Amino acid sequence: MKSLKEIIIQMKKINQILIALSLVFVFSCDTEDLLMEEAVSNQTADSFFSTPAGFEDLSKSIYPLLRVIIEQRELVLNGTDLFAGSSSWDQSTNALLNNRIDTYGSELTDGAGAISDLWTVLYKQINRSNILISRANDVIDGDATLIATRVAEAKFMRSLCLFWAVQQWGDVPMPLAETTAANKEVTRVASSEIYAQLITDLTAAETALPSTASDYGRATKSAAQHLLARVYLTRGWNFDGKLGGTTADFTQALSYADKVIASHPLVTNYADLWPKRSEDPTNQTFGPGDQDAKNSEVVFAVQYSDQAITNALQTDAGAVVNNDGGNNLHGLFGGGVDDVPGSPGRTSDYNRVLGVHHTTPAIYRLFDPINDTRYHHNFVEKVYAVVDNAGFVPAEGVTPIDIKSGDLVLEFRDWNSPAATADKGKDVGGTKDYAVINHDEYGIVDESNFHGQDKTPMMWKFWEPGIAYGNGFGEFDAVVMRSAEAYLIAAEAIVKGATGGALGGASDYYNKTVDRAVGGASVPANQAADPVGTALTTASYRATGTVTIDMILNERARELMGEGLRWYDLKRTEKLIERAKAMNPWIKGSNTIQSYHLLRPIPLTESDLSTNEITQNTGY
Image 1: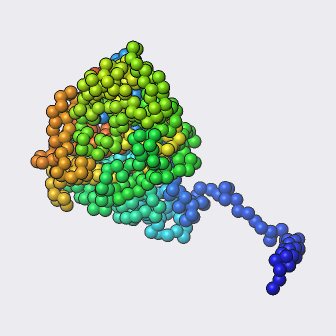
Image 2: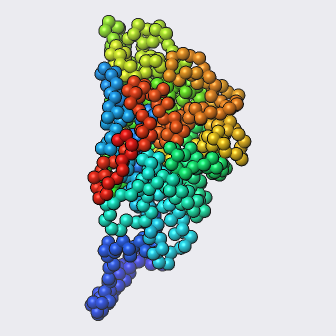
Image 3: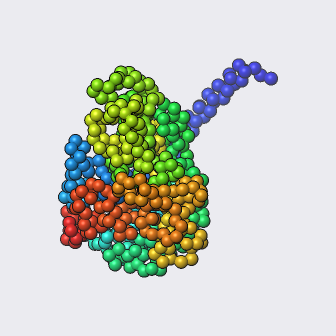
């Protein structure tokens, strides 16, 4: 056997011979026989997208823009019964600012940025979907079944965006083919025609889409069914008599909700739907590696990852929407604690909270704080010091307190368990070494308190531990559809006259989410009898007889809070004005909301670019 040294010497000789032969080959060939490179970058879109690989790449392009779309939450959360914007009142004087979009004031015009931003990104997404649909027949030697699946995905995506648009603005343009030439004429299509097209496209998509996607995150048969349930439910209410709806739509909504329920069982624990975390950041045992957004209940979600380039949020023109990238849900819902004693400032312990969506006082009183696990998951009731804060003076004349990392510094008392003065902080004459805030004090400025400014419980439903401090960086998927909503769609449809539910009557569907939240039908579920008052009298929110639309809206508030549905829910059920004025103190105080606010103004940017005159929605 040859030694290792001998083998190496022989290998070197062989390599030298091969190199020599290759040189002989090169110099003995015509230039036409040399290696020719194909410049892929020089291909046209027509030639590239007509290949199976190019068409597959095109199919992937219809998904990333969803990250931009779902960040346009100002028009779907704020100004409802549950949420108000950070600028809805002047924090230095508590004076209501009646001109804000949140209060349906003078800033809600066709020139508002939130209006044009949502319109623009929805139609960018619709155009991307149309490109794929229009080019499907041009694919050469492609798999027919796969192409049909990708077209169905595009029809689902186009329908999702058109459905959002027609709810916001009513009659809107409905492009159904790729835009290939400049055209500045804008034609508003009747809402009834749009709903008919949605049902046509989604029914076709349901047939062609698979039950399980080839890549997790693509649209599936259940996603089309869930959207059909929403579309039929909304059309059945027939807003302003213009959607073409009939009572038969409610039975269709129930039928599709049943299909979703059958294929997507609820997870056992509500908290398992969201990122895992400990409320005490000094004892945080979870991080990004512990999170898994996949579960049986999720029907469709917007995907994120731990890759910064994947999470980048950009428009077609390259404009950055979220400078940090990633899911920003974790830092938008008010209740920041950067200024409490023992706070280290800008760190990931509590992360940054921008307070774009502030909860209204009523929302807490819709929960049973003792038994409803959603309350405990959604709100941080106790805040802890992250660093030592020796010699902290809670108020003038009060003995300094040596605060240690891990000490309780701020407690929010449940609405049905207010603290007496003796059980509050030393800053207000109590005995506690930490601030205690009762429900009727949430959001009230009091410079004598530990916290020094208005505070409400942190809405931590989407909070992720261990991510970088900033406005984004979240890696957890953002849910767009889950089967818990399908139960409530079914209940609402039955209340409106639907028949033939697989589970029975409205209460059978309604109680599924309630009982999951409290741990069973034998456990009490009590909300405040008066969500906007201060009385401690309670009323059960488990259905034992007749189910009402208000009961369903209350349960949708508890179950689906912050998931991008609220404005649509209130508009659909014709309850926006009534509930916003009753439960949102900023809207009640301004009294500016009118019936015409059930539609948004057509954006000024669209009118300015159009060569024809666009009829503006009434009131704007």
